[in-house]
Image 1 (spheres, helix red, strand yellow):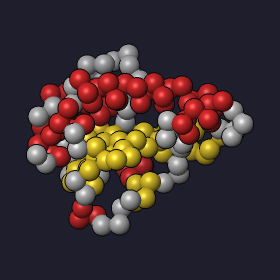
Image 2: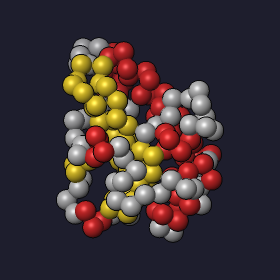
Image 3: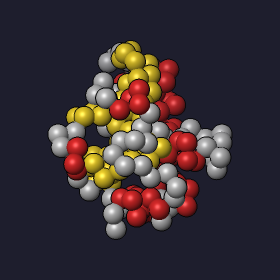
Image 4: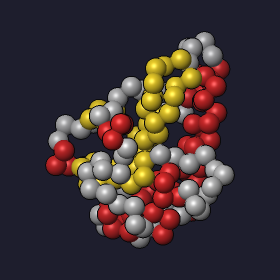
Length: 146
């Protein structure tokens, strides 16, 4: 099953497939850099597609497929007070993948989750939140390079 087929087989996002990184907001696309754009299999805006279904939840932003593996990216300010929000989004995403998007979940990369800072980085290494996000493998990065 291709990424496009997996998206189309997922009712919550069935009409959300876009080629390349076209589902990602233009202002963020440059923060995702791949070594070979021919290996981009498409993308979805999870947040926009699921807003109506989960209006009060902290929803994850995007998923895209590169070299037949799916990556999930959250663009969010990297501030200490925002860590709980992003961790809630990650929890929501993992639950959604298991219960509502198993075909997409089956295609995820070995290290699939990324918090890409939308602005600067302001989480002090001495803060407990810093330790938690590092343990979860979700330390904010300025740019994702694959």
